[in-house]
Amino acid sequence: MKTWQQGVCLMVLSALILFGGSACSNKSNESGENTSTNNESNQTSDNSLKMIKSNGEITIGTEGTYAPFTFHDQNGELTGFDVEIAEEIAKRIGVKAKFVETKWDGMLAGLDAKRFDMVANEVTIRDDRKEKYDFSKPYILSKAVLIVNQNNTSIKSLADLKGKKSGQSLTSNLGDIAKANGAQLISVDGFNQAVDLLTSGRIDATINDKLSFLDLKKARPDVPIKVVAETDQVSQSGMLFRKGDKELIDAVNNAIKDMKADGKYLEISKTYFGEDVSK
Image (cartoon, rainbow, N blue to C red; front, side, top):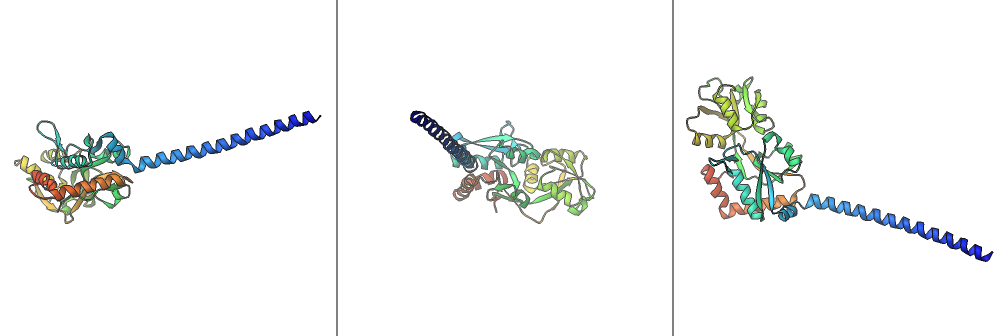
């Protein structure tokens, strides 16, 4: 009888140890898994720069159709002010620049989808964009101008846009200016298409960057378009990033700062504009 009771006790004790051990083991594993997941999440959000350096390249979204900022030269090579600035930034970070060309209206979605690490496309720094994205420090200042056909005499100011057709990228700040002045927006893929529609009489006007207009007239002095007005406000453009990429943004800001200090920025700026466009 005593032996039977001892056996029962041993069985109960073994069961308690087994289940107790399993419970502790499960709790420990769950804790470990949660910690690992959290660490991986933090690493993904906080170490974009580390990942870029590990890969040896930074992926950059740009249009490739917006001269003189981002376009293709006579040999078909991607070039432009923003392209050269971005390439120099990548060099100073210690990686190569890999450009992904996309239409403006899909560029922010591409950044959201992590198709690229930053956007270099003269993106105007605006409060509504800052709610969802982060910017570098401004690297270029410019004004918007109202452009019409050379023979147009009915549009002389922004107020004259009311009821007129204006060729614009629909999600750009330039399109917002046209819309605010009562224009009917006609969607275009870029400045070159807007100019083609303007010269063929299919639109009445377009609002675009003054520096783009000057570059176009330098390359094509006979193109029959003219500037009839310009905005009072000076816009600032910066490199665009997903929210939270602080280390990457700091590295880009430092690169831009160093470029301005050692003269490389001025060299690139004079190549395209003949002056310092950061002031």
